Image 1 (cartoon, rainbow, N blue to C red):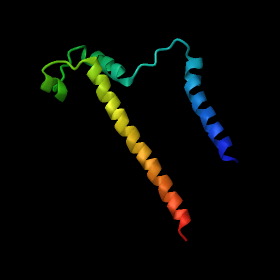
Image 2: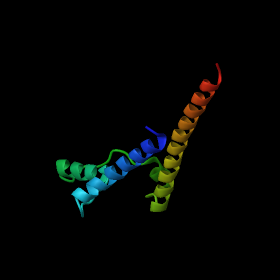
Image 3: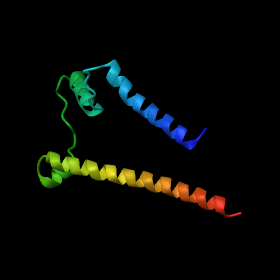
Length: 103
C-alpha cells in the first residue's frame, strides 16, 4: 500500500471519529468532565462540600484568576506538550534516518 493511500485512510478515519458522534446525537452538549465531576460531587454531598485547598495562583494573586490568564496558562501547557511530542517525533525520525545510512 502506498504511503499516500495510508495517509488518506488515516485522515478519513479521524474525520469519521469526529463526525459520527455529531451525526448520532445532533444538538447534544459535549461538555468536559470537570463540570460533570463538580455536579456529581454536589449530588453526592448534597451541596455541602467545601474544598480543602485552593489553587496556588489564586493564593498568590489574592483572588480568582481572570479567564484570560487561565486561557494563557492552558495555551502554554498545550505548547509545551506539542513541543515534547514534536521533539520526540523528530528524534525518532532522525534516529531512523541515521540508522539506515550507516552500515
